[in-house]
Image (cartoon, rainbow, N blue to C red; front, side):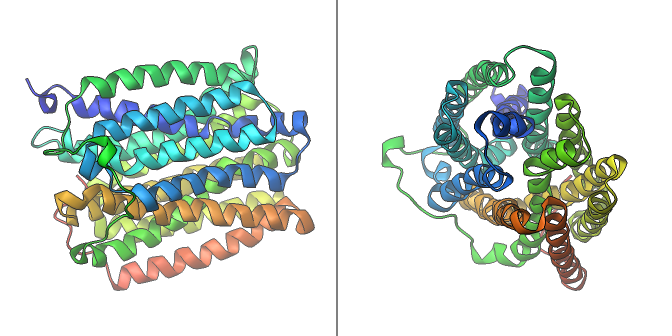
Length: 398
């Protein structure tokens, strides 16, 4: 019985989630690294951004390589890089190894993002395409959310807080490797891996009308998540005196959990409505975060995570469903990679900006500047989407 009828897409989604969990595993641990190595908040944002630049580099150079050589070899390489990243953190050799670990993590995520999204959808049996689309984006966001939750729990309640999370992740990577190994290839007549050549992500003409509004929404949504995964732990610890690392990890997890819930709603709303509604919720989430920074209130941080995360989920799943449906099969991974290039630009550049501004202004004031800019972008994207809704989508992501 073929993999399409044995829940193969769920195994592929599970491996996807494991890879993405490793990329956010250090989030609640940055404070411990700061205490141990004595670096500033700017360095935290740079360490975080190194990951995003790794993702962008792979997406730009090899975003559609799995369309040529097959999904499985690319995903297996990505898991190998994830394992090497965990080893770098286990060695605890100071900033150089932190940078290298984050870079390898970014390269791993870059290989997975487009290829795994396409693979999960292609492993689905007929009639399950909507569930597979949800499984792929939920694995992405759910994995990103489980990373800080797992690390926070282990760091708070288990020994070796800077080592055990990465040991556990290495075990999970081994299981993910076995899951991908057990699945069949979905690319017809794949070429040998050594024939792969650097090639940027593609954007066929028939995709462009769908791509522009989808990319705008993805950029703003990932910008908000970038704040929660890079600088919110410092705000929670230093300003709100939240010293429980499990609670820090849980709050970050809530943003990604809400994103997954938001994705569930797309099938009912449809892409054309989900994209602008996602922008509206992102604006509300940013407003709540501004209130949390101005008044130093923990409940507002939690509400911001839930509301903003839901908006990000609406926007992301609608964006992925829209561009995947419009893309020709031979270019699907490349088109999805193009979308995530824009998204990861949103998760990196604004975060570095906060780090730079936090030196002269302070973390709270820098965050308020960021929020003001992102609100303007979200409002512009929402207005654009209302006037020129995404077209060319055969279904609403269901």
